Amino acid sequence: MGTADFACPTLAALNDTPRIEVVAVITQPDRPKGRQLILHPSPVKLEAESHHLRVHQPERLRNDISFLEQLAPGLIVVAAYGQILPQAILDLPSHGCLNVHGSLLPAYRGAAPIQRAILDGQAATGVTIMQMDAGLDTGAILSKAATPIGPTDNAQTLHDRLAKLGAELLLETIPRHIAGEIAATPQDDALATHAAKITRDMGRIDWSQPAAQLWNRARAFTPWPGVFTRLDGKLLKLLEVEPADADCPGPGVVGQADADGIVVGCGDGALRITRLQKEGSKRLTAAEFLAGAPLPAGTQLG
Image 1 (tube, rainbow, N blue to C red):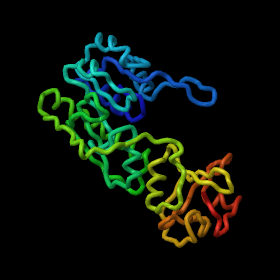
Image 2 (cartoon, helix red, strand yellow):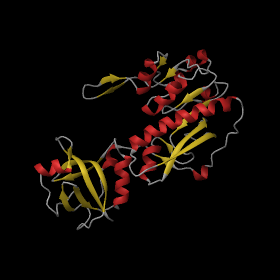
Image 3 (cartoon, one colour):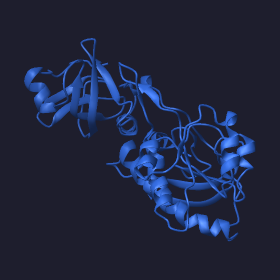
């Protein structure tokens, strides 16, 4: 069971393993996207169809349990599915339901563990394979694998690495789990943190915050929802930023602007904008942007 891109390496890995038979793939229904609201399949549906696997797309899983009962699966694997599994489904497979989660549980339970780890400035994160229960990412842990969060990582690069790591860890875990070689470890709820869903408005830059915090925000929100500020009342997307060792007059104030970037003051420190996009315009390097719209020192953003 899966919907988002994060689940695709897991599906591919399961399907490529000779000792595992994928009897069906359950994913969310096709959803309308774009201005014309054209129906688009989920990434997992496309992945499943590329392997000629049976796909089922219930609107509400709890209303379609009979389909799973007929399949009688020995194991259910869930990754970025987007629906809570009712107890009747959790109890169905003889070897339970395993979830591939993009954090080192109990840290970052919830919808946005990858973005939140970067946003909080964590030095490392990882993936967890857990036995699912009725709670939200609260099940007992079977295995974990960690990876550092580097200074060049953003939500996309970390997502891709964790998706691959999760698929690899799952394949290592399944045979040991089925053989009864793993003692599942209950999560310590006292150590749990919640990774709440990211919303579009969270991309707004508050220049009064420290530069390090804003840099984490920009990386956490790449590629979505991105970060933005305002220039002369118009939206200005900041596509690439980096910490800058420079003095600026104040938060949101341009200190210098040249081919190397646009340096803007923060509550503590400064950021250099190297790629940006003005509302209604195309993406530009700082040099290209400044060639058409010079930004004198003292210009206020925000």
